[in-house]
Length: 115
Image (cartoon, rainbow, N blue to C red; front, side):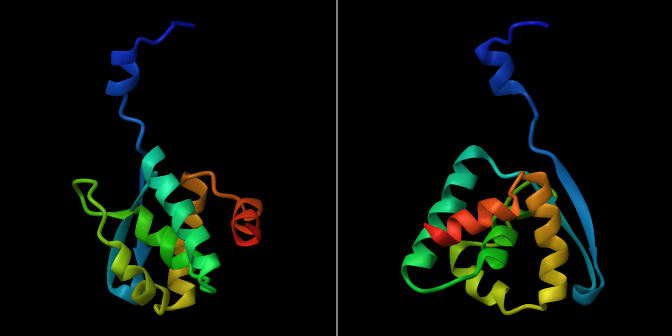
């Protein structure tokens, strides 16, 4: 196996995407792997929500992972609460793909809720 250089690592296209059909919303969404910084922000936001007595893991993860065709996030921090009020069935479909692509397990979510 080849030892990677810094340039090779930084140039690697490692953000995977998956398109999810959303009949409830009348189309499709693109779900993308979070960056390291994005996952840190997601986890920090979950901790802050928990500290403030809120729980919106689904809305927060979906907001962190749904992107446009150029890879830009569709939702900002201020959209998370409104996104959490969408259909649980629809959110679960996108949440499940987001969790799988980002290796976010049920245990991870439980740990976030505990902390």
